Image (tube, rainbow, N blue to C red; front, side, top):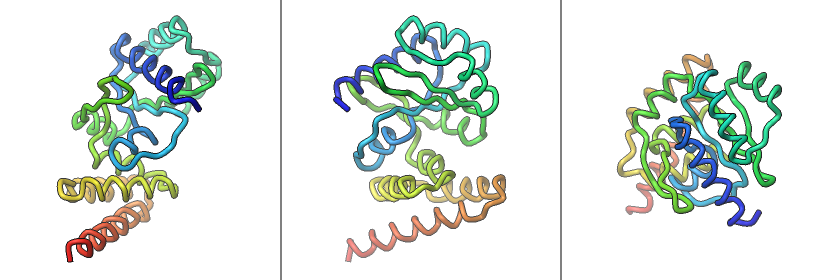
Amino acid sequence: MPRSKFSAVFGKTIRLLKETKTPYLLIGGLAASLLGEARITNDADFIIAINDEKLKTFLKKAKERGFKFPEKKLWETFSLKGIFRLFCKGLHVDFIRASTELEKEAFERKKKTKLFGKIISIPSPEDMILFKIIPGREIDLIDIKRILTRHWKRIDRKYLENWAMKISDEAEDVRIYYRLKKIIKEVEREENYSRE
């Protein structure tokens, strides 16, 4: 995928979010690359604070800006799962409605950075790690390790562990907590070894 095409769609998405005054956080592979190590990704993922009424305005503006979407299916998916997808120039952009306590907290702790010439909002390293520990796919665990390694000296481990326990309790799945603890221990061992 040509970088220029990807950056054009990304820029268009950021403009749409700003024009519609939609609070957002960039997540997914792009944010993981900014917070950890660069990796290839062909889409953009955002958490947004939006309700049904604001979504109507957002979609109207998106259509005017050249984004495409199957309207009926989009509304069904948004109503059922709080997610939707827009298409532009053969690429897609995914949006997740902020609904959890963690997502709301992440908006309060957001960071600003620059990507493709745009000032954008991303989660703190800790919140990005927590977003990724929930699905816990192999790529997510790699991203977590890279983010932890890069921010090791400044990472708020207490915040991470408290939230991981809370998420585990809510999901009734203690593996989420132990998965994170295991990665933290691995990075700690590596950091101690590199200092010897």
